[in-house]
Length: 361
Image (cartoon, rainbow, N blue to C red; front, side, top):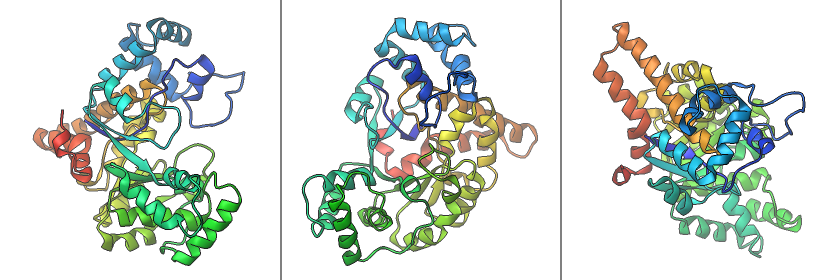
């Protein structure tokens, strides 16, 4: 399998509060009257991760965390990454505090490739002391210097998908950059600069991932429906750049439509797989309703906890197996076709889109 979008793991054992915080997309503290173990993801951790650590399925949260702590960070991380069965990981490095590409590759023993976050690079360039007039060219140079297989945009978080789909003019970018630099140039949220980064990514020519729909409260979900990208998608099409819509829940059927009608659009239901737990098989089945199977990919969107790398792969395999077995048992498909589709989505499509043919393990 190829996980075409994941993040690093924390370099140390988290305490219970931090662990539970990584079982939700909320950035708020877990209320004292509840636990995130009582969630679809929390139940999935106890069911599928506990046996990897030598516990019985459905071990209590207290048992699970006690054994996790006694085994130590290295052992737990290695066991769970190995149990995932993922042969290659595309690591998006825009989040702080997780292991980087080299460290993750060393720990997992698998090929790991970088996906570069556009907004993070723009913020790095702005913090290097450039002038507003220099920023556009310096950003393009920085993107060109990164050895990556893909790019990622979080414009969904910073603004939403209801942005002007046309590329901004250079003078417009310089004006916006001047205002941003005068304010301290920390978090980029100006829609002109976000559009500039996105279109500079198109110019770079690498596949572009876009976080879509479900995520933390930093975004406004109603402004992250991928259908709002339709005009932008049409504008990108002549450039021959692949767009990959990440996660997409609860708009995964809308994403499937876009993947069907536009040759350069692909999608996954990555983040939703872990967070819907036992019901993830329904989400996976729904993702197979409309789009050509060559346009669907696997991702875990795992971040922080190695459990999420293991669970994403484990739940995806189960959901795909059950959905495809239904088609075979009903006589709608034959077994060989089902196996071929599973390989396409689990590996082959990512290898094609990102040029990973030489990275098979």
